[in-house]
Structure formats: structure tokens, C-alpha cells
Image (tube, rainbow over all chains, first blue to last red; front, side, top):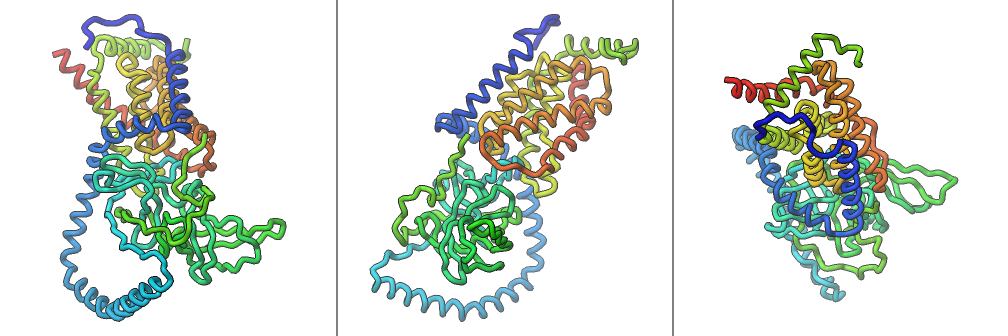
Amino acid sequence: MQTSPQFFKPGSNPLTRMFFFVLLSVFMMIADARSDAISEVRRVIAIVIFPLQKLAYLPFSLQERVEQYISDFKLIEEIDHLRHEYLSSRYDFFRLRALTSENERLRALLGAAKQTEIQTILAEILYVPRDPFSRKITVGKGSSSGVKAGQIVIDDLGVIGQVTQIYPWTAEITLITDKNHLVPVQIERNSLRTVISGTGRNGELELRFLSISTDIQEGDLLITSGIGGVYPPGLPVGRVTHIEYDRSHKFARIICTPVAGVDRHRQVLILTSSPPPVTEIPDNPESHASQTKRKI
Amino acid sequence: MHPRQNGKSRIRRYDYEIQEFLFPARKSLIYISLITAVLINLMPFDKVILVLRPDFVALTLLYWNIYQPQQAGMSIAFISGLFMDVIDVSIMGQHAIAYCLITFFALILYRRLRLFNAFQQIPAVLWILLSGQGVVFLTGILAGSYIPEWYIFLASVTGALCWPLLVFLLGIFRKQRIDRDEV
């Protein structure tokens, strides 16, 4: 603390200082885009921030507790409902089991790789940035819980995105709506394979380079095809909402909305063991959805 | 000379400067208020509140650089900018540039801004915040992203409207410290 009054400003004038810091920031931005040196700084700051993140989430987890406590009163009704549901889904289950064993036998006949059981980690969404440029979220599980970069994140409805950056207790997830994110998909109705990409806008995906004559309709569900080996097959990704045929272009403009809702949930599932690649991994690096490196 | 600088406001300005020189705010108060601002920025809110929520770190930095420019400064702004970059998962340096610009405007304008009360400061705060958001916007575009919706700038408007409340709240803490010293 200062004991005597200061009559002159210490240090240089604001303009010089601003130029110094702006230069430093520009240098950091370039370094961040070009190399991994800055990601160490990022990691350190993320560790410092973690307790604050937990603290900021505290009121929300308390609210969830209270809601859960209130909903305990409705348990009897819910148990009835669930028992009914259970009985009716029993039939589906038996059929599924029969189909699974049949499928395994057929796969064994074909000599294809066995599909492994997929393990999941439940994580809560800690932070959704307001920054319009980043389609990314932060969740409260990190490398200490076994999360690795490249793993797939889903909710109860479909694919949300992919883990792109991990810290000890938190992880960053790039959403499928990110502009540089590609997901290999197929149309559920006719198994037509293609690649879906984000547009950078919230709740909007795009199918590029599908010709006008392609068999696709509004309302078609797109599921992951499993090609590329990053995404396991069969997960719902999006639904076709708008098709625009422009005669002057070769390709149709097809807009889809993601099935999963990041803004509707507080919990997500991270798939920890992705299945072995069903088909050969193509050499084209574009189809690897994990490559979401930004360019400056 | 500023046209509004009559005798009364000159006294007020004198008063402020005395406060600043003789009773500088404790550095810890600045850090605590900044950490609180980061905490509010970290709250996981939903759609509408998320868009309307002002950047409290920017507001707090602006406050301290207007009322205690000797104690706050650009290095604090730069470091909190880096923290916000990690929190918002943006490019390292994006918020740092914006906060440095905000601090710069505060440092060249603080004498003039202190002549007005918190409500009269709202327009100035609005364009300072808008310039900060504009920098984030521009660097984002240069980094090769899309053009976002116009309504992200609403955060600056709500930020400017929150300004009197912030001045009042932080003023309470700052004045408390001054009173204790005088006793």
C-alpha cells in the first residue's frame, strides 16, 4: 500500500502500454493458431479456473437437488408408469437379443470385426460460452475420469459433438454445428452415405455437394454411418428440414437441424471406447472429424 | 476547458482526486471484485439470459480504471482477458485485446468521465463496451469464422444499463475503506 501521495503517473503513457499489450495479444493469437505452445498456458489457466467453475455451477446443482427432492413425491406414479413401460419394452428386448445373436453369427460368417460394448461417462455441462465464434462447451469431466481427446459426446437423443481439448478436470467439446466439424452420416431411409458439416450457426447443419437428383426428402433422419471409425454407427445426428433446388447450381442446398439439444440438457454422455473401424479408414484427411484446427 | 466544468464540478473533481491519491483502494478489493465478475460470467445460463448477460469483467475493469487508474492498469486487464479467453474457449488474446482497448479508453477519458454521475456516464460506457465487443468480433472474423447475428451486441447495451448499479455497489466497498481510514 502506498503511504505517500503520488503526483506523477508511474510508467509509460496509456498509448504505449496499449500498443505493447496489443502486440503481445496478436502474437499470442498467431501462436495459438499455428502451434501448440500456447495450449500449455491454456491448460494452466484452466486448472486455476476449475474451482471457480465449480462454484459458479453450485446454485444450479442445488436447484437440481431441490427439484429432485420435489419430484420424489411423484415417485409412485412414476414407478407405475415405468413398470408399464418395462413390460411393453420387454418384447422389444427379447427381439433385440435374438437379433443381436443372429447378427453376431452373421458377422462371424462374414469375418467382420466384432462390435465392442461401448462404455460411457456421464458429465454435466459446466459452461456454454456466449462467444458467437465458438461452437464449444465445457463439461465437468476430464482426463482424471478417463476422457480422451477425440471421444464422442451424445445425449439421450443423438450426437452432440466431439471432445477436442482435455484438462485434468474439465474437457472442451466441439459441437457438430461448428463450422469445421464433419460427421460421416447416412440417410436412415435408404442408407445413402454422405458427410454432414456444421454451418457455425446455432442449430443448423448442412449437407454439401449432394446433387439435385439425390433421393432425399424433408424429414429424413440422418444417422452416423460409422465410416472413418471415429463415430460409432447408428447414432442419430440430424433431421432434414429444408431442401432448396436451385437450377443454376449443380448441388442442392440441404439444411438439417441437429436431433440432440445442447441447450436443453445439463448432462451429456461421453463414449469412452469407440468401436473398431467397421470399414477401411479413407486416406482423405477431410473425413476425420477430429481435425478441427482453426486457421487464422 | 470543458463547458460543464463549473465551480461545483471542479470541487467534485478535486474531491475525487484527493480520494484517489490519499486513499487508494486496496489491490485485494480490485482482485476480489474481478474474481466475482469472472464468477458471474461463468454462470451456466440459458438462451435469452446468455445473450443479454453483460460482460461483467469488462465492466469491472472499466470501473477501476475510471475511479482508480493508479491501482488498476493494463496488465490486470490483459491477464483477465487471457482468463476470459480460456473460459470462452476463444483464441488466446481475443478478449485480452478487447480489455486492453477498454482500459486504454478509460485511462485517456477518466478525468472527463468523473465529472458526470453514473447515469450520465452511460452513453460513454456504451460505446467503450461496443468498441471492445467490436474488437472481439473483428478478430473472430479474421480468424475465419462466420458472421454472427446482430443481437450479440445487445450485451453491451445491457452492460451500459447495469453501469449505475455497478458504480453504486463497488462505490460502497470503496467508500467503506475510505471511512475506516479517516476514523
